[in-house]
Structures are given as C-alpha cells and as structure tokens.
Length: 364
Image 1: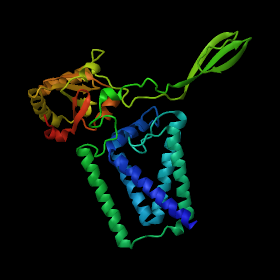
Image 2: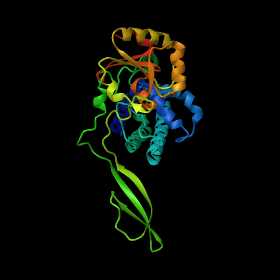
Image 3: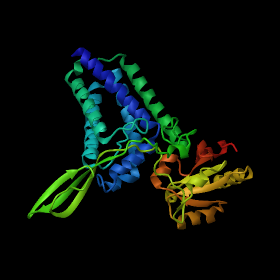
Image 4: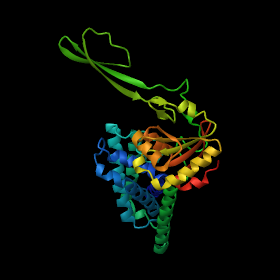
C-alpha cells in the first residue's frame, strides 16, 4: 500500500500540474470551453457565461496548486478532499459530454492533447481510482519538507501562476498548440489527403412490414425488403480524418475569397471574433499599423463574425482603410486569443501573430 500510494501521489500530482499549466498557458481558450458547458444546449447555466474567464483562471490555478500541495504533502486532508471533489465534477462533465454528445472536446489538456469525450471520461475514472487510493492510504502521504518550506513553495507557486496568467492574457499563449501557430501554412492545413480515413455511418431503416414496424440496420445499402418505408436514422459510428484547419473561410456577400487571399505574398489580417467584445482602445494603434503595412506593400483585411452593420460602423468610427470579411466565430477564436489580434500571412504561411498590446512589435 505504501508504494501504491507513493505512485498514486506522484501520478496524480504531476498530472494535475501538467493539466493545469497547459490550460493556464491559454486561459481564454479554457474559458471558451466553459462557455460551451454553460450554454443553454448543455448545462443551461447562461448566467455563468460572463464569469467564464474568472472561473477558468480560478480552476486552472487551483488545479496546479493542488498538484504542488499533494507532492509536498501540504495540508493533506484539504488537498485530498479538494482533489476528490474536483475529479468528481470533471467526471460528471466528461460523462455528460460523452453520453449526450454535447461537447466533443472537454479541454482537459487545452489544445495540447485532444481526447475524445469517452477518452476524457476514462481518464477521469482512472484519476478517480488513484485519488481513492490516496484517501485509503493517506497515512502514507508524508510531507517532504518542513511547514515553512511547504508554505513558501505553495505561495511561490501561486505567485508564479498569477504572473504567468497575467502575461498570457496581456499578450498571447507562450506555447501555441493550435493549427494557426506561427510557421503554419493555412492552405496546407486545409488539405484532405487522398488516402484519408473516411467516416463510417450506420443506417437504421424503419419499415412497416405486414402491419408491424421493423428496423433494419445497414452500413449504407438500402435494404431489400418488401414493406412500406417509414424513416431512416443515420449514426456516425467512426469518425473520418479531419484536416487540422476545416472551418476556415474569408467571405464577402456569400463568396469565399480564402483561396485567392491565401496566395497573397503580403497579407495582414485584423481579427475580431466579436466586435461587441472588442477592445476599442486598441484601434487607434490598428490605424497606424494599417498605414505602415500598406506603405510596405501589404494587403490589409479585417475578419469578424459580426454583421456588416457593426463592421461598417467600426470602419467609419476609426476611419479604417480596409474592408471586413466574414469568418466563423469559433475559427477566429482559435486563430488568435486577442480581440482584436493581428496576423501577418505570406503565401498562406503565418509569419507573425500578435496581441493588440504588441502591435508595435510587428515588423514590416
């Protein structure tokens, strides 16, 4: 039991620190995931949506601290109870997501590790088992430092987490795990290989045969039966290959200009997923940036999921020398964790990406 508890302690502690740090690297991304959970179609807690970022920051910092405290053997009872309550909450959410197919990615490890809903649930069950083992053998969870040292290390960990969170929120994630990272080619990211795995569907055909309702399941072929067709239900039983970038368009008046714009040798994208939530104080600097970019021969475009009325009002208010295109909101949130944010793209390849606080760092 002593060795099992020691292994469980290291495994759970390291995993919580890793999971928390990955999400702390991108707290905005985790807050977007929480907004999905809080939406009416999932948990129906829309009143929590405005607090998603604050909740995300609390959860990820607390997650890191619990991992640190477990490894240190600091406040063991509080730590174990907190771990248990947290993993029970996570297990409920991942089961709910998997069973009802509500949120396809729990965001447990941010964009670094993508797990299926059932994979996330399995991971939480494994963690729950190890935490129960820690409860059963908590007498073996001995501190490895004196009381003052444990307090100092925990306090320092808290300060580091807060400073790190502040940095990534004011700039961008230090490590970018998304398909739109610097150096990635957007056009190549949308390519579907010829030998790509295709999705597998199951079809449940419903017939009226001799007055009785009968269901015949096939993998696509229409059943050879004598009877009156009623209905068919289609279920995807195996996902096919999906390119890293699969929801990217640059539309104007219903026309997608992405193929031609991504061939531009010099292109600047000003991205604001929602103009209602955009930081308007940043736009005077955006105006200066547009002038510099155009003087260096760059084509400049705006990209937003907001409607023409809002984009036209923004252009008029700040006299922006550019036009806006429509792009899916989720895609824009994925591209850059800043509202507004700026990308420099050369022949489809992202060469620079900055937060609105770092517009002066752009090199043209």
